[in-house]
Length: 78
Image (tube, rainbow, N blue to C red):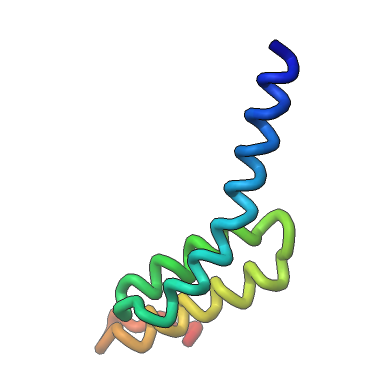
């Protein structure tokens, strides 16, 4: 039973490690609103392992979201 649990954990971690790569490849063909969600997901995916990449993707998503906003709703930061 322990080995089954260990194998399950290893496969789970392996699938999570491939997720950011798939998200980055989806950025090329995604619509603007989908890109914002992908940048957010990338920021969350990299938050614990690569904080500098997490900040990069989070800022990219925030800039893209701010560029789509108009008038008074536009955030001060961008």
